[in-house]
Length: 317
Image 1 (cartoon, rainbow, N blue to C red):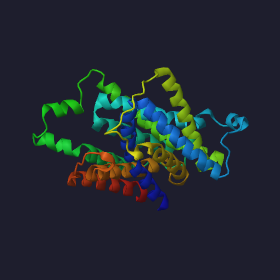
Image 2: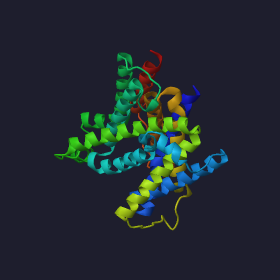
Image 3: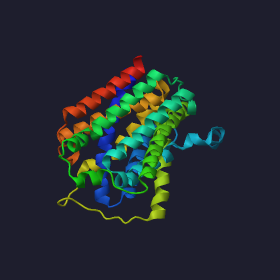
Image 4: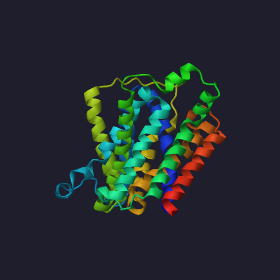
């Protein structure tokens, strides 16, 4: 039960991190600089926690060479997933940018658990678990896209809205497949970091190593891309909370490192997804973090309940 609560909490924090990083991106004028700052702050936070945990900040070369190479790629996979979402948003629109990576996460999580990949606890993929996963995915689609579907059915959505959500391009299917791949990499990161925590004997140190590798990757990207820093203020000031995205991201990775050995990759991914949907609805309902208020509808609550039923099917039946 504690593991499920942790999954829900870190999931709720994920859309908050996204909103915070979006504000940081607007202030710095570059998504890559915003990602680098966010990862950097998260790395410093986890480095301090690692030292408090009486762990070293460096990993011995003998340990690195003795382990499979993929064990150290969690941070890199996280950067690819983050960058992938930045690329997908203008290509697919907000709805599909959520749905297709989620599809990849659920599929990869179930396969990883079924085959025990990356030393994840084995949980056989049965017909019932598959149906539960489909319910979760359907619930995500209803929660994210249900309102726009209803508007189109009732004729309230104009052609401009439809065009923005599903841009017509010959390469649309390629971007959708890329979204699924990004979700697969995200689930893989969850499994890899979970095993890294077991190898290092410290979940905090594992989260730190993952964030450090992600930060180093972003430094290379920034050096290659050389984005222009254009620091902007709103009415002469910037909100203090826009620097907290890295800390929320660090706690998210740390939570996943804790969850995987206990409940497996697939179930961890699904629980976090439910938390993510809850957090997104809370931000919309109350306009947190300077977001525009968008009252939650009964249809969205119904989608969330469908997700919960799917989880019960996976976990109980």
